[in-house]
Image: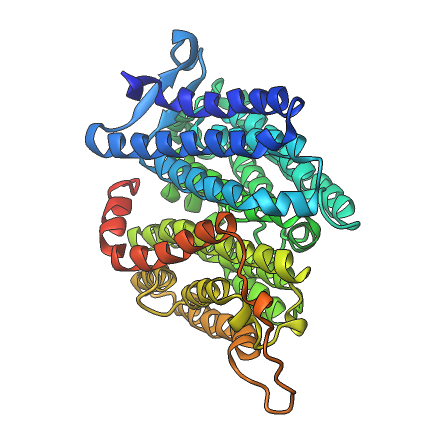
Length: 493
């Protein structure tokens, strides 16, 4: 049965194509992107099949080599991991499809190593989500990190420096996580998450266990760009190639958020976590500050990619805030925002890529009302996605914020409620700047009608991935009740 081996098949798909791309790419480099599309598409199909299978038959535990834990290493495909796997692989597929023209523009002649690295990054992301072993999670964390550093180093002249700074900061975060694992292993003698979770109540007051929890949360907080550990993100996303940012920005921080979900909800448990240290309160406060900080900084940016980078700092705060609320509504809102933000941010970075292909830049100060005439489809997709980011019904972004609002009301946390409302207004401000330039005529400026040849939007290979993601925000908005019903079913007690 394919379901039995599904977790391994998803990971092996990326291993296989990370080898096939160099093998065929050295022969014909133009084959690299189609092979990456096939690999990511196959993984997306397997992920969809696996999640449907989970809904009907339940979780899958795959033991490598037939060795059962705690001796062997396992992959666990349950509701939480299945949901994250589905989101990241589907979004990655569309990002890789969209990247064909961008890759030829941004790094001509380097497609083969780029797409091979993309497969390795996705292998690491998928492995982190599916592994049931804490040390194996660290191994996949390093695989994804090293590939991501290389992908983000491709771009402008400042990209290698930004990627190197991310490497230094990210290595520090990974080291803290590894130290936490070491403390837990010395106490429990196991690295399997399920096995360790059953033992931790016995060691509830052990100082090593408490220290491990703090180290792991801080280390993964760096990878998630949780304020104030976000310093690497704005420059890394701004200076890298748009192809790289479109792939990593919607996915990377979500995987780190997944690890926080897994550690706090499934390994330690919320009751134990709050009993020994106010972890959920601390990360909730940091998330709230990050939401406001990222939104304010986004307003001040003139480069679209940099504005979206600071917006990512804000948006990851919504997800962490939902985790910190530690109730079903907060959990549902956080997971729904994982889905919504992955789609919204991928779509917006695709739009910045579309503009770079056509205009050679994505500088907001240079936008004008001719864009809506020259690039009608691109600007329409921007309008849909921006409205969703602001959080207006019936688009998807409204409903994830709505469930987070219900979570704050459930906890009587009026400060977090105010943060969500204020940040939505700030989101409106930085997106309205673009609306004003593109959709409103400036009476003090001579209006130049585009020439006939300037009415060409981007090619279909860039336009249809952007359009599908934008339209899906409308579909998710109307289907939010069904999706949230599924998410609440996987809520851990």
